[in-house]
Image (tube, rainbow, N blue to C red):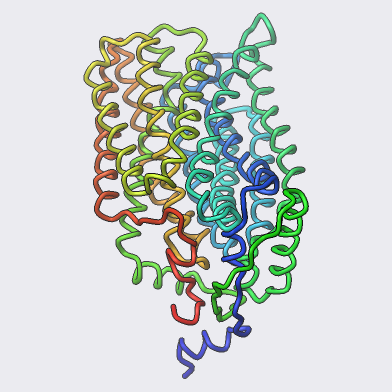
Length: 487
């Protein structure tokens, strides 16, 4: 009988010694990196646009001009979207590790485009839910493919701030979606039955623009050399180096750090899972805690924020409030992101989680005394801090596991953590709002705030004890590739 070791040995393509990781990490920041950010980072703008559109269209979707939904249906739609994201992340994540980053960040964007266009033609709740599931599947797949590619293409000393900022760009889409819904849901500007459909359809135009930009984004050289395509990896890195030397008028220093790899065309999901959970159990607990906390906080609060304003605080047009809230999230990620490289991962992750959790608990206690403006101000302060923390969950899952498992690990922790927090959150808040609306007492939704606060604080405490000091380190030093000779 052939042993597992024999099977792994027969699957090897050869052994190579490469300096590609060291060459990628020693690059200075250049125009080429901005092109990568634009091409890959815009997925979060799409996600923010999608989630905000649904939240801001809640009153229209509940009317006769919409689909006649209830608050519980709105919460259900949010949960279905997140479910699609979780399953899409798992499905496309393992394909990303197997077939490469570039193929999958193109495929998943197409899935998103199909889903959001079909949503515009919704005729009933069932169609609407099916389209939300498909759209979510595309976005979930994007998370795995894009985070993998970004971290493998960005130099180590910039990786923290860039990853935090790019994930925070979700809120640019959220702000845009909030402002977009203002004229398109105004019956004086456009027919109410048509405006909400156009709002969904317009998201597809941004997706097409992103698809056009991405055609020039290369495959990850790190993925290529492990999968037996070292010549292609060398060509891509050499092209990047030539471009930077030419545009910045400099000569790059040679590197002397190398890595010896046993090349494999494929690595089974079972082998990846067994290795990750055996070698890195503490990192597994860390990532699950971070994802569950931020997923409940955001999906619970933000999916139903506009519904809360309109139901309890008599706000007729929620777009301006949501836009202000969203912009504070982006500014928070932009302002705090560099500190994840300078101050360090552990103090920043734990600090942002604990501080935002405690502030959310305070908001829950004073909820009955807040107006639409003061609730929004509370949200802006809380999520200015929480935005960077939530983004750090994706950064952590992407950088603390071996190269061969990166996309699947992101997908796994996103799916499990989001299933715990992101599906339960919208369902719980939708029911809390329905129940509280009968009495008109906004404090009926405070239990959701307290649960979110507890999960965030708990995740911050876990980060203190299990966090990884990954700032400034090469990905290969943080977690040796499974195929490395001395792994």
